[in-house]
Image 1: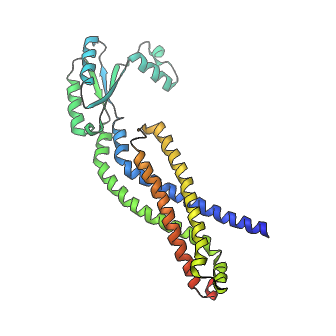
Image 2: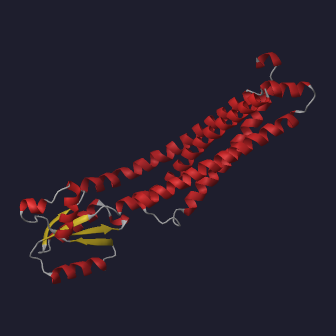
Image 3: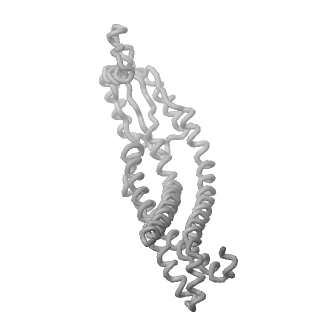
Length: 287
């Protein structure tokens, strides 16, 4: 009997922790995204290359002068030169066969991938830059993803506004979900609460252990969600975004702190109201 009761209590607490941890994890991730939306978009912009294809007859002096011009241009974040041989090796690796042997020659061109600072990745600025590049005698062609640049700049503000609205809505939903989880947890002990009241225990005395227990479960849930959240940030940052963690440190702290704060506030307030509701109910209403 004791073992069965212990297992039931453990199962109840386990479900509470899993439910609240899941909600807090998504809440932390959402808050982090809202706080870092500008940085994420900027990082994405700075990974869009303007590819300058170089004619085979271009001289080393022309290339050297062009690279020097790029290196002193404040709008340029970085540039990468790729020889036609390196490009052929990479393309052969991608398609799984040596196309140069098949064709008898290498049709690819030497190229320079130019990456600009985020504030310069605007349609008008990039169009001007492309026109200037195309004026160079040694340039065969300039290629870039114009629709992508337009899409990012045209829709970013709209997306950001909607994200803020969704963030507030998500916080509201999170509060409701956590409150319902706590209510279901305490509901199974409603008769115990009423029995303690009937034998003379004060309301504050009855509420304290329930509030304390739910706060502990809330903090434990926030701790678990924070571990998963920080691990996910490190993984995505290492594999996709490569943003300096020091730059996003404050937003990580805010997201985690919000998770702990909400777990404390919702756990304590919800438990207080839920236990008070059972205490104020007539015993026949509890069945």
